[in-house]
Length: 342
Image (cartoon, rainbow, N blue to C red; front, side, top):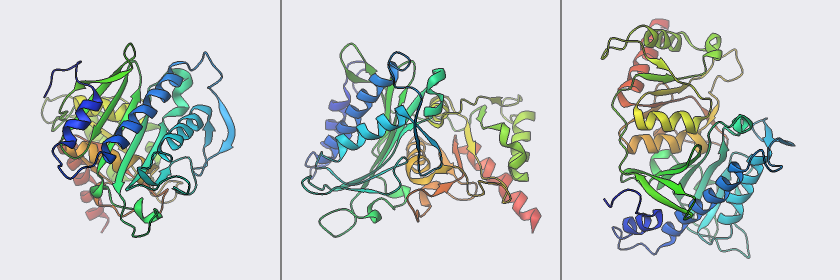
């Protein structure tokens, strides 16, 4: 692997392309398009507070959430770059009710892209890191143009997944299945430069990330697990440390680098989120693919997120993701509680 700080993301994409003699460059260019969109979004995020980009648009999205101006900007930027590229057949975003089919005069490509344009945007006005999440599948429909089925594929069939985090620096982390690599944007040259080659998440961490304000709505299995983390860490003899930012990309990024577990479990059936909050296509599946390729694990509490079959574009799921041994341990707590109920 080349030295850090001198190897651009474009050269890295091209190096990986050479390992596939049949490649024609379309996939590489698609990744470059996403990186370009990330640079543009980063520019606007970094100016938030100085220009009229903060606040609400007055619209409500399919999730029933108020749309932030930055959400809208990020969504439109990604769509305008990708739908005219000739490399995409379908686009699915958290902000759009329906899938976006690429229509004439634009060329329909061989890839379907799902994305959360700006995760955590409700925190932007207090300067908390936010991010863009993306997932790429190969076109599977037979027609000349894409169909919704091209988006509704399991996470295990992803060709690539990644995120761009906009924080103290802007960083793009991605995988095409062969390692997870991180690139930091150098604003002085306008390039993403290799900063974190071959990221591997520790098998076990000592931090947990969860919104404990939802404690009353959790299942007994989840309550027991969090209580266990607060009491004892089997390896160090110390309790786990709570580290919760409230932005999925930020919490995930920290745990990916240092180890730990992020939880957004389902609520009890009598509450409003019995199926979890996070979106399978736009958030859970891409994060699951990244962590899997880095040696970690993602679960809905009982099953690998990568094996979940999406039935609709905005399907929700619980998400437990992070260090392999931590997530497996959570599954054991849930299985034990389910056994007791029977």
